[in-house]
Every structure is written in structure tokens, then in C-alpha cells.
Length: 287
Length: 256
Image (cartoon, rainbow over all chains, first blue to last red; front, side, top):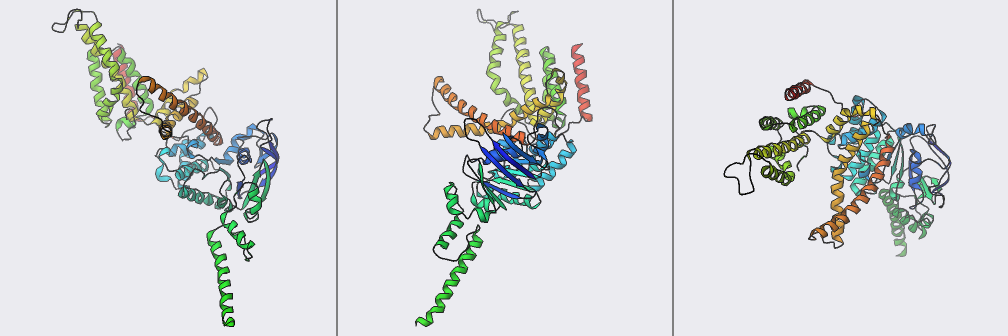
């Protein structure tokens, strides 16, 4: 459970705050996407969640532990695992196994317990076969899964991801999201930053950060369908939503909260069959 | 590549890295005062260990290649500039090869070559992880001086981990410079230095940025300086005790 109260964060007193008066609470098991233009404060916000940054004003509580207290940092970082954008710069070990063992080693666990956790974490992300490999020889998607295994070995409750797919190709992106969704189904809280509105639409809740303020916090169907508003913030609404909105503006009776091709196809074909039906109904009378 | 780890299964590979580190250090010290016969014995011993490790002997020899010019110079210096009784047929006016010079040249250069070969056999039969774990254990007594062996081991292991990254980065910078029309085959020493300076500064700034991000990632995973635990636990076996005993016997024998 995450509780953020009146959080303000200032990097530099000369500049405007990176985060301004954020109030937010995230329940266990939620699946949250954070979107917003660059410089909006997304990365600054998630770095507050594992105490890489601590509030200038206000409070951040993780499972009843305040990030303001340095004594809590060790436990907070165990509870909140973080994945960064560039997979290469978060690998510490010389082999896959050893990299996963880094977190448990920091917790001071026994070698036998570390081995057990490494094995189960690698199995969970499907990398058991590659335990002895050198990490730099893995593909981008495999590297991000390795990073996830490194977190799972610490038995976290919350996983925070900073644009985890930005550096990956399409198959790597699917690979990573399949893994993330599996973890969400197992009850972990997932919070991720993304530039990709289709990815954001997968979440149960979307937060929009703009100029350090939380300007929207709702279900994707409510947030991602506000086409004009998203464009005014410099964000690109999902293409399917844009298409549906255009059709709606042209007078078709169609829902706009459509995020996958499957549903779009369904809606449009119902519409088309309806029209065709009307035409065929009309024809005989014209004759 | 010389000095590169050969992942094989051999009695030498299976030895505890601590034993291997101690052996290399001890042999290096003992060699320094070795005479020609004991050097010959050591070489025979080395060839035997190298055979037992199942690593190709040619790979060990290749590791000597980069240091060879230096040792050839050393050999020549010893050969011509050691005073003693001149050898017949090998003296030309003022330039004289002496009996002592020849012995000295062979022993001294032989010692150093054997040292390099021993170091290379060590890294060929011991993985970087084993080396760091072994060093971490051996350096634990440094705690008395306020040095943390855990931190040292972390540094060494990160250095190892960054070597492939370093090579990848260097290649991509080189390609980026080539793409913008840089001539990478500049001739002359001045040109080469200019080229290296360009690569090195970009590489250094990239590496600093990377390490900044790595620090964040390490902190996010709960890193803190000082004691920590490891996946690989070291444990002496019977063969390790055997090798340690043999080393002690050799050391005592040489000292007496």
C-alpha cells in the first residue's frame, strides 16, 4: 500500500518544483500506468517510491514506512523493486545467476537461501536455462526479464518500472509485458511509466503528470479517450481512440473507449452490417 | 584472447581459488631467488600443471607474446653486459658474451616468462567470479586497517563486468565517428594519439553516465557498502589441503 501526502519535490531552488503537492494512494495489487510529457515529473515521482529521492515537503509511506526515515530505506527497497529504462546499466553480475543473487546478497541471506531464490526467480521469468551465461550476451527482452528476476529474488510487493520497453524491439516489448502481467496476476502491485498509450491502456488506472502536477487519475477508458485534452498536453492519444472519435464526430453511433484491434473490428463491423442491412431493406421500396 | 577463462572441468579448475591465488603468489616469491636448475624444475612442474588443467599449452604461450619484445631486450642486456669469463667464438672485439652472462640471461628472463605464464594459467583456469570471491575471503583480515574486503571485491567484480560493455561501447563510438567521416586509419604517431584522445574522452564520459545509472540500480536493489553475502560459498576439499601441504613443503625446502 502506497500513501503519498502533499508531496512536493524541488531539485533546484532556482527552478519550479519537479513535483508539486501530489496526493495519491495506491492499493495492493493495482496495475497503474503513469503517462505525461517529458519533464512532467514521472521519473521523479517513481524515484520517491523506493527512496532514491525523498520528499522536500510532504510524506511518502510504503506499507506504513516513511521514506523520510533513512532507517526504513533498506526495507522499502526490498518491498519496492525498480526496473530502469536501459537494461544494460542495471546489471551488476558477471553471470545471469550472480546478477539475480545481488539483491539477496545485500539482504545478507545464506548462500543456500540465495541459491533457492535465484532458481525460483529465474524459473518465474523463464530464464533457468541461461543461469551461467554472461548477461551482455542476452537479448534486450531477456535482459529486462533478468532485471525482473533480480527483483523477484528479493520478494517484493510492489514493482515500479521506468519505461521498461523503450529500448526494446516489438518482440522484446511483448515479452516484457507478458511477464509484467503474469506478476500482476500473482498479486503484485505494478506501477509503470510509458510513452506508449497502447501500453497505458492495458493498466487498470492511469495517472497523468504535467508540469509536476497530477492532472488526471482514473480508469484508462476515462483518461485516454479525452483526445483534445491529451493533445493539448502534448501527448498522442491511442490511434484507435482517435479513429473512433472521428467516426463518432461523423455521426456514427460508436464507443470511443476502444484500445485493441479486436474490439475496434467488432464495433466497426457491427456498424457496417447495420448500414448494409438498412440499404438492403430500403432497396425493394425504391424499385 | 590470452588470459581468458577456459570453462573446463579439470583438477586445476576444481581447486579452491584461494589455494590458486596463494600458489601463484608463493611461486612468484620463490622464483625470484631461483637458480638455473630449480628454474628448470619449476618449468617442468608448470608444464605438468598446465597439462593437468587440459587448457591448450599454445594459449599459455600466446599470453607471452605481448611481453616478448621487452624480454628479448632484457635477454640481450644480460647477455652482453654481465662481467665474467668470455665464451670463445661468441665475442666480437669489445662486445663479449660471458659464461655468467648467458646463465644470467636464461635464468632471469626464464623466471619472468614463467611468472607471466603462471598468471595466465591462473586466469585461464579460474573464472572472474571465483577470483573475486577468493580475493574477498583472503583480504578479510584487511578489516583491521579499516578496509572492507567486500567493497574491494565489489569494485573488482564491477570492473570485470564492465569489460565487455567497454568493448561494445568503444566499437559503437568508433562507428559513430566513422559515420561522420572520421579517418580511423590516420597514419603517424601524432595522428594515432589524436584519434585515441577523441575516442577516450567520449568513452570516458559515456562510462561515467553509465556508472551513474548503475549506482541508482544498485541502490534500488538495496546495495550498501560493507558486509554482504554471496551465492557462491567457498569450501576447501581434500585436494585443496593436499596442494596447500605440497606448497608448504616446497616453500620450506627452498628456504632451507
